[in-house]
Length: 194
Image 1 (cartoon, rainbow, N blue to C red):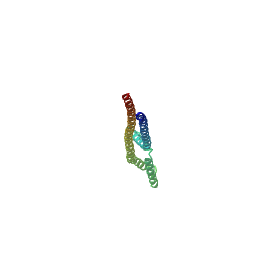
Image 2: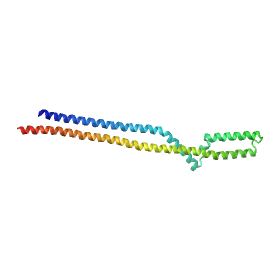
Image 3: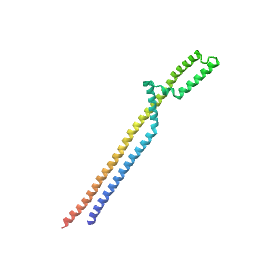
Image 4: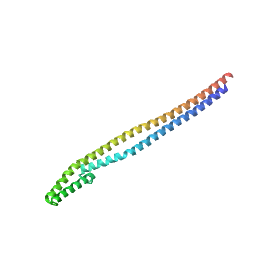
């Protein structure tokens, strides 16, 4: 009977220690999972950030042109400059070949070409910016979804860790109770013999 009581107490203490160790291990695993989720989120966010930045710059250029009348970025764009320069060079060469360099008709043709070319090229420029802006907006949406999912996953991992810890406390208490019950049973049987 003495050995039974000793075994009961020892089993309870061992069980309590094992419950505590298991809960601690689960809690650490949950914390590592949360850290891994956060690290992956930050990496993905950094990978996506250039797309969002490009979209923001495109939107800014569009807003400057549409709302502020600032077309400087359009006039400095490589597409516009190249087409303007090439077209003017062709008109200058044609006018020079006809002996009309710097004539009224030549200047009129250059002016008309510049205006027509700017109008057509502006639409191309604006459409390119709109496409880049949409890519940035889509990327921002992806990042928002990714952030929400990551927060949910981290929250779940932390809850799992908390539940494991709480379960460990309960199991530890149950082990102590079982040990005390065994000890109490032993004490009761000893008292009954007297």
